[in-house]
Image (cartoon, rainbow, N blue to C red; front, side, top):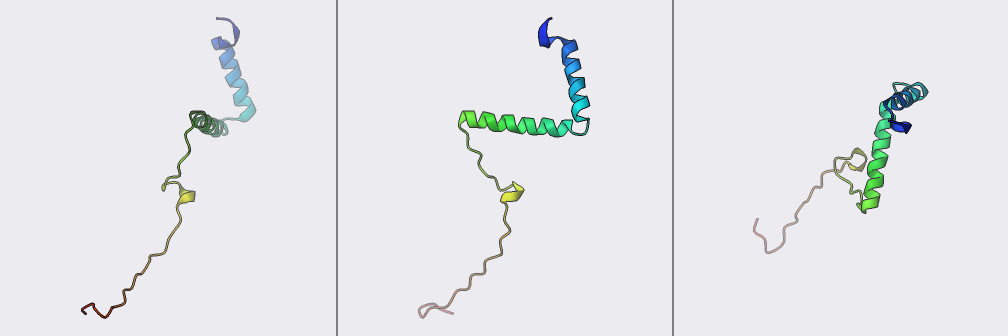
Length: 77
């Protein structure tokens, strides 16, 4: 194999990336790249991101609503 698809070239590239960013940041970089690719693919397909109730920033605490009924003249008590 020739070119950049050679296994030796891929190993050298991975070592350079490891030295530049460090082992602690590689998972974070991979996660952000994956998220960016999913968003890009969704934009190309025309899919809108729909908010879900499980997303922490979209869940808002609500106070319980208390409904009190007032008796009318024709209601029996």
